[in-house]
Length: 317
Ligand SMILES: Nc1ncnc2c1ncn2[C@@H]1O[C@H](COP(=O)(O)OP(=O)(O)OP(=O)(O)O)[C@@H](O)[C@H]1O
Ligand SMILES: [Mg+2]
Image (spheres, rainbow, N blue to C red):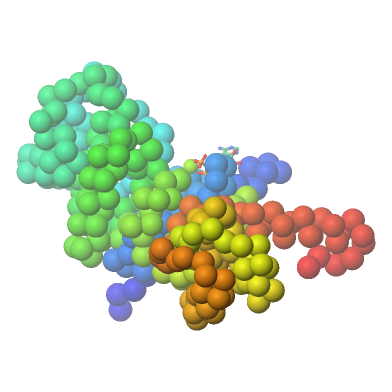
């Protein structure tokens, strides 16, 4: 039976001496999805990817890719990989770099190479030497190498970190097109605003441990916020909404109401009672960025609580 999961990671742990790069990482990525793997520097994202690719042996844990054991050679043929740090020989031409990688995969002929270069926008730079390419163009070349074998599962470690906004947009389009063809994409990135329009599901890793896995939709709808634009607000009005437990921040007629949509009429009524002019009420979608920061801050608070409990000799929360 064909597995519905492209990636199944079970308890992946990697220790370097006494340092733990990742611990007990369990992941499920469905086929045909774009999966965003998020976390601050040093969180363990690249380590997890390298374990899955068989480049770093895990201390503990195992994984399956495309329904087969992750070390299976056949599976490796169906995987594309863009490492976070890579360098091709500077004297090779763009075409040669992709051609050599295609050969390793057993692909001969120009067609696949030309298609990969077209897909990443390097078709007109085929004869250029690697040493003449800017950082962003080298990243495009890396992407061409990753896709030349027409892989079913693509691991991209920070694929657009050196690209300008147009380059990022183009890569986003390319990844959408790939998903449309049923491919699975595992994407490490810090560019949260970019992931927002791209990923079906995400996981957040921090200090080697997963702190969230789930759908993007859940995150984006987890908290509703509304921008409220008003005329001058008397103190009595402000006191009244505070008294009713309505949470508004901001000032000078430019407010953000954080809470249930159902309570908006209540807020309206209070404003009307105080004859406050209301010009606009617009929903503010939570950005992945603000969720990311909040999650990390939440973790900080939790850790602080643990430490406080330890200090007092009590059990951790
Ligand atoms: N070969 C190694 N030897 C020792 N420690 C390592 C090695 N590789 C990674 N680490 C450590 O493991 C932790 C996780 O590193 P990793 O590269 O996986 O993080 P990352 O989330 O990819 O970070 P970044 O966003 O900076 O790329 C870090 O503390 C890093 O210093
Ligand atoms: Mg990394």
